[in-house]
Length: 108
Image (tube, rainbow, N blue to C red; front, side):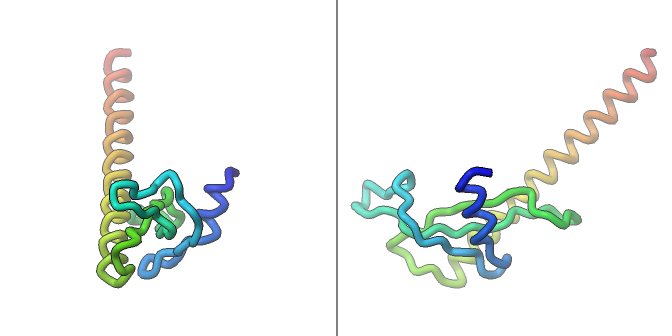
């Protein structure tokens, strides 16, 4: 397990209050504005009907904006959209596998 995965596992918050990790995030620096991201929200990406998360969304927090309920709501919406897209992709893939099996059975 990499240190990034450990950080994600350790600082995950509830869906209504994502975990915040205070650390230097040089790779996400906001060079045009002269500042750099110092905080990150780490949210679970979940799919409906699945108990465990599909992954984590790590989003740098804009140092020039207040991290409030609206900001959290946006990040929760983003994590929800990603979870929905993952669910759609998995459903599509499962249907494709079923179709290929059916075609193979009819051909054989």
